[in-house]
Amino acid sequence: EFALMVNDFEILKSYLDEGANGIESDITFSDEGEPEYTFHGVPCDCRRWCDRSVGIGEYLQHLSDLTTPGNPKFRENLLVVVLDLKLNGLSQDALRQGGLRLADKLAAHYWTGNRKARAYFIISVPKTSESEFMRTFRKELDEINFGDMSAKIGFDFTDNGDFKETQKVYEGLGISEHIWASDGITNCIPLLLRGTDRLEDLTRQRDEPGYKYIDKVYAWTYDKETSVVKALELGVDGVMTNYADFVIKVLNKPEHSSKYRLATYDDNPFEKFTA
Image (cartoon, rainbow, N blue to C red; front, side, top):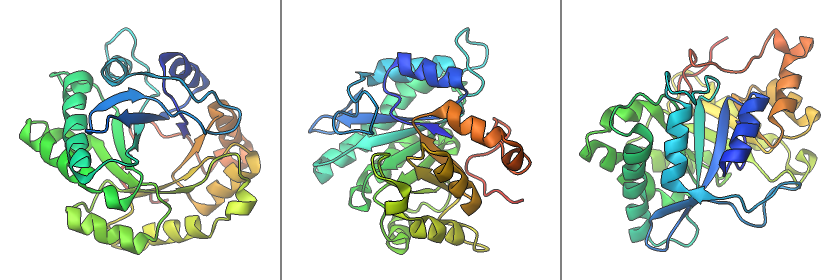
């Protein structure tokens, strides 16, 4: 599960204390494409404080401490970090610069030379038209000799678009693994209105033998038991929520615990699950 809008240290500690094994953080950029802060702003999900923020370098360093075995701050349950990139309005040049600079920031502040920090990252881009960000991000990792860290990186587009079109974009980027697909809407709108047709399509596509362009499917934002149970029934790999402890309680109910559990570090977030 992913705790949503984890944009400062206080809320990060709170969610980890609740038992979350994944977090989603919002990353803002300057007009030139420089990664600057964790910040969502208004509007955001209902019943949430939208203005939490911390500098990107400081945030990545803190995540590094939390996910490095042997560090006094190490939190064993934190496995996956979704970086929800706020790229709206950036030019293609700025997108290219943004991908390059985010790779640099991860190398400088998260892996910091020793590469012992063990979290996986999902680079979550809003629109397929912003795919240049992914291209330069991957290229820069190679050029700064952090290409081996690609094993810890996955990708996701969050525009709820036609996945056949999304597949073409991935093909153009040369990406055919470590792909997460998502479907969702703000918690202010009931799941009943959103429906689950697209989510069902994604899980069906994921499970097609030999299909390479979806490894995992997650749903957002699921804050009610009926929604979480529906997601489990559809076979999703993860849910984003504002209430991590609540989702864990649902998972631990006898009717679910025999079939589902929270992922641990022994599970690979880029491998398809087979029952």
